[in-house]
Image (tube, rainbow, N blue to C red):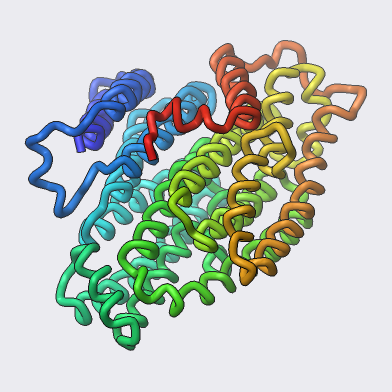
Length: 463
């Protein structure tokens, strides 16, 4: 909880920097606060915070996911100086809203109670409704904000109805009491309905089909830096909350929901990858790519074992690094070309080789090519699912989806590297910050792809 308090105070400080017309300072305040929070996350909780354990418990798993979220948010903040340069009048609000959303994500990592779950989801979601519409003069951004708000409210209704059914069945909001009830009463109809409604609501949050319909338009219309935050930090938070809820609270009725969830995963893998193949805009392609990765991550629910939480964390970190790597390049191209079609990337490698290499490695990691962190993440998920023969079909669908994804990832790589003439001027150079982030992402994806055990050592995860 100390990390949560630090991030919240950082968000307040960033917000008030705008009052004194020091909006540019908000980014530096955010970076400093995130670094302090990351350092503190490696230390045990202060004893006086133990009184809140019934609502929020900073366990080893919560600490692991908090750390990876802080690292990814820190990288996104490093990219913000160039990405938000057009938002000089309200930069402080944008950075503060992103930090407030992160507070919601951190709340989800440690929730022990359905009330805390609901509060965490709302704190995570409400700032994003505003951030999606940050480009106030862009109709697509306005559409993204309205669509996200309306669909988010619809999903919140499902979540609240589900919580009401669960409370009506168990008489408790506590996660462990719900677990005991699910084991003792696996055939309770009201409880099962509540479980399915919560599953549907959380599937919306992580963009699993058929609840993904909002994500392509919202991701496409939102400012690219905000989209990168949604596709990484928000997905980390949503998936861990879903995983914790379904595998701890609803473990007694697993057979009631696992097949439904399997259908969601199969539809996601097939639909998202086929739609990604049909896109002509790189940003919209990445939106469908994000949906498809929700399908791969969903495999963690099949063939679960003692390492499932760690496998989930590794894959989410690898995927989020790759997402930041691609969006870094997308932000640069959008700023210069005012568009994000595949054509806009032609010849980028000649003027910005470092950014292009970082993007290419990130895309290869997303595709699951060997010697990248993405390959190790997918291999772990597939191997876990295959430990049970009943999951063979869903793994085959995932392999097929992964093969399809290679085609649309390669289209972007070909645009960057295989055109003799570059349409980028030599004066249009990426900032030194972008180049530092590019080196970090290249090194991280390759090192974790070759030495995946370093992940546990870096984040001090004992298992």
